[in-house]
Image (tube, rainbow, N blue to C red; front, side):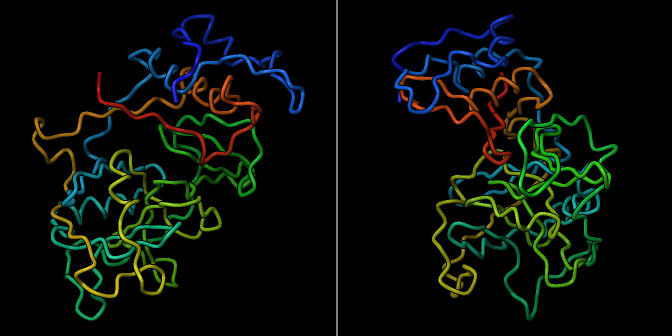
Length: 309
């Protein structure tokens, strides 16, 4: 919906002012209309080249489906063993010809080998240690949200990923936000090796945090997965082979010719521009918004991705 008032580009002191508390914000029920404020789109438009980083080709996966490409970015600082094994699986072309085999409404879409009796063999590690959490030290610069979180003592962002932390225990982990990619497992903790992966397509199931290895997130192509027909079997698994969606291939961007790569970049989550993105979502302006939330949940913070400029 187009705003009635055009917000000019945010530059210099205007960006700083956006991050300050808005004394003019109308309290709920006051009847006073909220003043216009910059939107996320305005912040992105006004951002500078230094506010963005390209995807790392060695940690970017392209999953080719009949409807198009899904782009995933691995987070090796938070799941180094799982990320390494997934790269090994991809490089031996394990996923080529396999399937999207599960679509559970409001929960996850999962892909891999659905054949439990005679599964496809692979050379990569069959067993990978669970990486439900990792030492927070060494994961990267942490930009903390000021809001309290139900599931973690601290939440924020590191290098373009939502992150939860326990400062007393010195641990950090990736949460189950929308579009995050997890490693499917059985009951035992170390039964997830990356040969079956899933992404969150519904409301963030944060109760899964620290119970499953989360290895990255999908940065492009989520609509191709969220529209998958819902499985009619238990937990949304497809009951018939013809219901599954075939995977043409999965490749590391580093192994794809430059001309065929997706030219994407992610906003740096340690940047002032990203803080402005958060504030634009936390306290939306009028005239459409009547009551500004004044707070934001970790999984509702948008992490902008765009074509390289």
